[in-house]
Image (cartoon, rainbow, N blue to C red; front, side, top):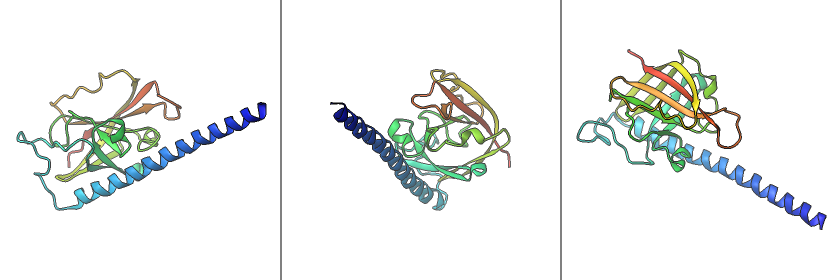
Length: 193
């Protein structure tokens, strides 16, 4: 009886490890595909009219790869995908629906998983540069502050439209296993060139 139980536990353990490995590989494949789609969109001639609404705002469809978040210090090019649902975040950095895009004079909110796209976000420091490449141009931001908040604290997402600011959000602590109790927030302001 104990021998059968031991074998059963080994099989269950192997299944869990196999599933975790598959999830990591699947996420990397989806992120890579999204990055290729985003590069094709960004590298084509600048197009101010793609996904443009009547009010002049940039409104891509949910789940669409629309741009690239470049983090020079980390040597990272990450696809920006419209939406922050689990399926969207498996493809890359999610743009929070209802937040703004560059040149729309509001709060731009980008979110990503701490164990995939924002794995090294804790290495970023005040003064580091973040770049966003979209079909209608490239934009640079400088990190001005970081903050740790509780997971249910939504006060940082104001969706204000008075000043352009970029927020990166991810779960915290970075090494936590399971649903992390906090969020790590990176604030950045647009660089004037």
